[in-house]
Image 1 (spheres, helix red, strand yellow):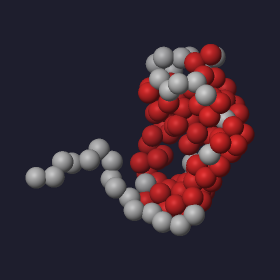
Image 2 (cartoon, rainbow, N blue to C red):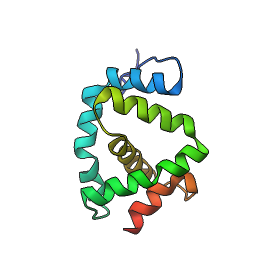
Image 3 (cartoon, one colour):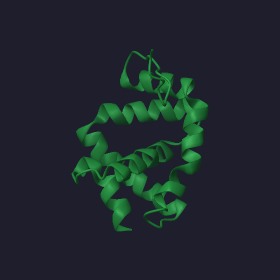
Length: 117
């Protein structure tokens, strides 16, 4: 008997950007649904406006590009094909990091900035 998964498995290949595009196309509605509730979830622990959350998300692009540029390219591909902005996708990452209580590093800057505001 197989265990049902919470999320569908999506097989992708290619460059990080191409894989992001494939993920965005395959999971477009799911991604859009997550972005609708992301800020609401953040606001359960930290009060932050939508505008400020997007500024914080945008501020993470430089350190992510420095340490893991392939992940940023994947996010850009996903943004293009899903119709969700790169900043909104980055906010989804921030929500995940916040809930995981990620250790502070420059690469996890989103978590620290969200918690400080």
